[in-house]
Length: 357
Image 1 (cartoon, rainbow, N blue to C red):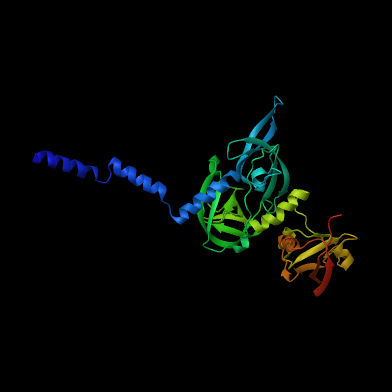
Image 2: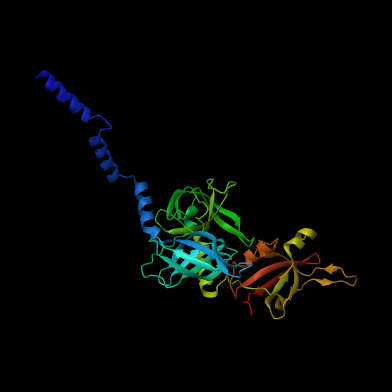
C-alpha cells in the first residue's frame, strides 16, 4: 500500500515538472494570450498596413539577334504601396521601374495585374504607376507627417526583400536630414535614416510610424556587401506628398523657370567659379525681362562672364543641383530675390517666376 502511494506521488510530481506536455501546453496558451504593448502595436500596424503593400516586377523586351523574335526578360523587382485605391494608383521608387517595358503588380492576396507608368521623378527617386483594371478592394495607407519624426521614434518597414513577399522589419529613426544621391545624380535632402532592416527588394515600400501612418518611402541602404547593415534611407512622406500630385497631373515634377541656360558643373569645377554662370538668357522669360545677361566672347575670342548666380532667396548657390533645389521651393508666379555677380560687382534682381512655355 505504501509503495502504491509513493508511485502515485512520484507520477504526480513528474507531471508537474517543467517541460511536460501539460505544462508546455499551458505555457503556450499563456504566450498566445499575452503580448507586450509594443508587440501588440507592431502586430496591429502590420495587419492593417500589409494589404496596401504590393510587389512590383519589371521586364524589358529584347529582340533576338538572329531569329528576330522578341523575348521578355526580367529586369528587376521591388515594393510599392497603394496611394489611391479608387484609381488604382501605386507609388514606388523610380529605380524599381526605370527602363521597364512591362510592369506587373502583385497584391498581398497574390492577385496579379498589369500596370502602366503615370509619372516619373528620377530627381526624387519616385514613380507613380496605375494598375490596369484594378479590383475594388484595394487598401490605402493613411499619410502621416514626416516633420513630426524625431531620432529614437519607432518605425516599421514592409516590403518584399529578395522576393520574399510582405516582410516586416522594425527599428527606430536613427538620424534625420540626411542626403543621398538620386538616380539622376540630384541630391535628395531631408532623408530619414533608420536601422529597420532594408534589403534589396524593399525599395519603394512604405516606412510607417507606430500609428500605422506612412512617413517615408524606403529607397536605399548603405552597405558594402549589398545586405542590410543597419543603415537604411527613406524619402520623407512630406516630399512624397509634394511630388506625387504633380506626377499624377503632369507626369513629371513641374518647376518654375528663369529662362536661362547655365554652365555645367564640370565647367564650374574646371574654372573654379564661385556660383553658377548664366550662359545665355531666353527672350521673354523672367531673367531676360529682369535684365540678366549671359556670357559673351571678347574681341580675342575669350569668354567674358555675364551674371553669375550666387544666391536665391538668401540661399547660397554653388552648383546646378543647388540651383534646381532652390528653384523647386517656389511656384509659378512667385517673386524671388536673386543675387548675382557681374564682372566683380554684386547685383540684385526681383524676378517673377514663370512656367515653361
